[in-house]
Image 1 (cartoon, rainbow, N blue to C red):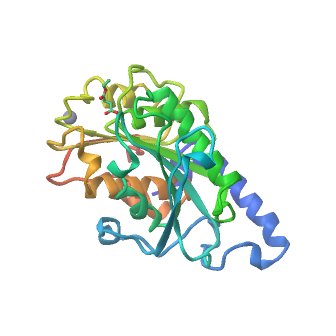
Image 2: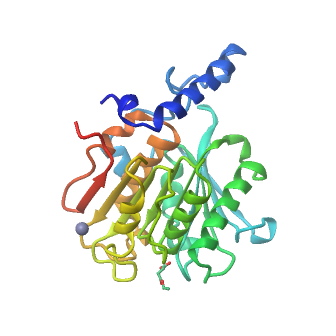
Length: 297
Ligand code: 9J3
Ligand code: ZN
């Protein structure tokens, strides 16, 4: 599929990155990690397969550490997960927020799962359990700022390759963060909840995952209008899980992990090897519906 001709936002980003890589490369071959493909300095890990995306872990071994709320500002601490090896160079980073009244422990399976595909991940605690989506959005951005500016893993992260995700009010917060910081490379709201139904300002590539049977953030009044309101000129996708409740992200959910990782790889790493999992999207008994801005041919 001729990606560069059909994804209007990709060529600019890719060209800027390639230009930067070319400049770095003139200073010495060590500036470009040896494992990266020659045409994409951000490609990490082996060629993807459905089996690897659906496995409980990806190809990278990970480590983690806890972040005390007392040691940071703007969010409530959390847990950082990161690939242990630095042999392939730096990684993109993702901040993830839980939902209303929930702690990071409600989503913690996603931390090592995503990190093991080659990302630095911070699962955040919010300042209070009752924080609303706009606050959660600001806290996600504060957590990314912490990661790239002050964390002990900051040297492992490319500061320009950042993403957000979250569940429920954390998913609503992911939309808030994407609207507020268009330099983000991806957003993945899961069963998102927000009183604001219109996200026409979002330019960040956004994958929304909804549950068909969600009665707390019904897709008809949350995920679907959120998806529809994002302009078609933005990269976007909507995955609706067959029969899933509001709480599908709180236990291991294979379709959610597979699509989330593929989306992050495609847009945070510019890794077109993952296009095959996005266009066409997933099918099968777990999938009620998939919408996207894939090219029609
Ligand atoms: O974060 C969420 O689970 C939002 C759904 C919710 O409980 O909203 C009630 C105001
Ligand atoms: Zn549906």
